Image (cartoon, rainbow, N blue to C red; front, side):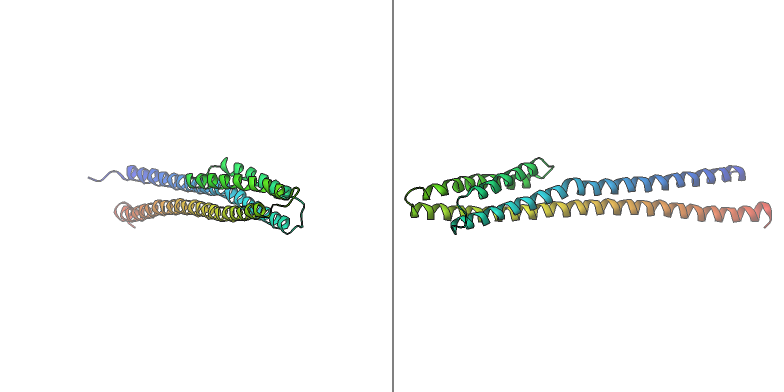
Length: 212
């Protein structure tokens, strides 16, 4: 036995009203999720990329200062040491960010190599104090160059990992946006089906009771 027309009309009005509220809530939730995902990329991954670029710049500058010293264009290695000290501060800044365990492990390796590199740079001027110790100078020079190149390589790997984190966060944001979009499409589809059902029922109502 069918329900009275008034009851059915009230039901459909309430149902459509609930669908409209659901559509609004779905759109709002999707918007908040997408905004949060984008903020994660901006707040977490981008600073890592910035500090990594700064680390790379400092090691390249330190290497340049080392070559200037070896070419006797500079009196000592103090400028190279200053660059390394700045590099260490950037490493510490990167470590304080919300980074993955892989990035932390790479930072530990870079810091250990940097510590050895700085010691060699500090020892180099001593090889020319008084009588020039050519054998010691060559040994320290080769060690410093090797450690510098090693740090450059490690920083390159760190930059790759930072880039991978950014790409991963972007993929997460894309998945959230896609899920929100399909959720809205699903609710909209239900709304359209409800409207079609209501239209079909209303036509029957008109034919039966109103004689249209």
